Length: 424
Ligand SMILES: Nc1ncnc2c1ncn2[C@@H]1O[C@H](COP(=O)(O)OP(=O)(O)O)[C@@H](O)[C@H]1O
Ligand SMILES: O=C(O)[C@@H](O)C(=O)COP(=O)(O)O
Image 1 (cartoon, protein in one colour):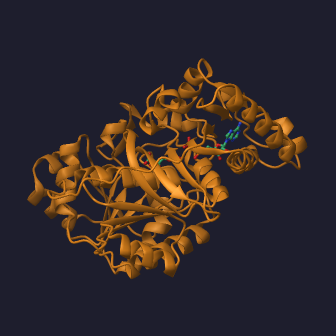
Image 2 (tube, protein in one colour):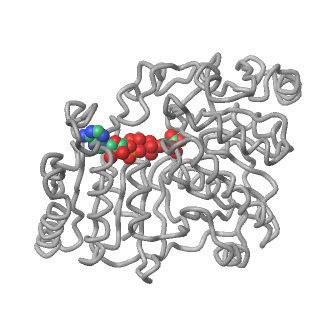
């Protein structure tokens, strides 16, 4: 692949999703950068000079009002086109997370229209993280999505599993499905089925990575694909991929900031509580005095770092589903907003106290934290788990950070304690 020619442009609806897609492109040998927000002209010029094969624009649009999500996604697409990208990847969640008013459909509709494309595949499947699609139904670790822990998500509870049924109310286009039998019949059969399908969107089954390879092969000429990050792993590996440069390590204190309530994160918190200094956010205290709480947490974290240099501290929101607040008390701000603001506040205050390495759990949470730190671009480093990598980025004030943005449901149980080894 020629240097300086950016081929792939990704538009991701959250920050963990962006680093997830980038992780998979890097795994296939593509030099990939992530921009946090729509890149400015100056940032586009830097990306051109850096000689990337792929760029992902991370947005925080999954739960944004529809119009805002569409406007930002189209602006991201426009920036990527100016960069010279010729193929586009609309990255949403592998568990199809969306609100009832749904941004996945409107965003895909807008990207299709902008690109003048008449079809796009819909491929949430990411087998390496247990997400598979069979007969149009999304499974998580072998359970139907609607039976999985995703039904308890605080912002985007998923109570149905049929991907076409989830998408239909969100789009003005028809949605068709192509079953696994056709994918397994090979590339020619699959392409013919997609072309013949009675829908602009075609949900394609994929149960393992060989299925994704077939889908990637037959969509190689399509301007737009949509899905989780798994389809990126279906690309053929770049044969002459240059060795990736070692990621710079930003020396400083370490913190885990976990706003996710997902079951994997709750398990990781339970494990980390046995090993790390930790504090749980207290919603009542945040409602009473959020800045004061952030100050107290920062004083505590500073004490921990003084006592045990090199040890991460953990600040988290939820360790049991009982912690979830369905609706705020009358006249009060929603819990999700308070938690995001508190963790973003911790990020900036911890950074001022010398923290430079953050492992952040949760997509919305990562968006809030990284925006607060004012980091605009990430270069990926070592992978920690499927869909999760360390990254390096420099903030507007010149501070450099190592950040790992972990999707709530990704990662092994010990990621909050063992994940730091990659920075040694
Ligand atoms: N106790 C709680 N009640 C309601 N919402 C919460 C609570 N704790 C955290 N949240 C919110 O839940 C959301 C989790 O979303 P996110 O960070 O994307 O995690 P995930 O990756 O698991 O989806 C965040 O907006 C967070 O602030
Ligand atoms: O596709 C995925 O599952 C992830 O990349 C993703 O988008 C997860 O979102 P969060 O769970 O909100 O981090």
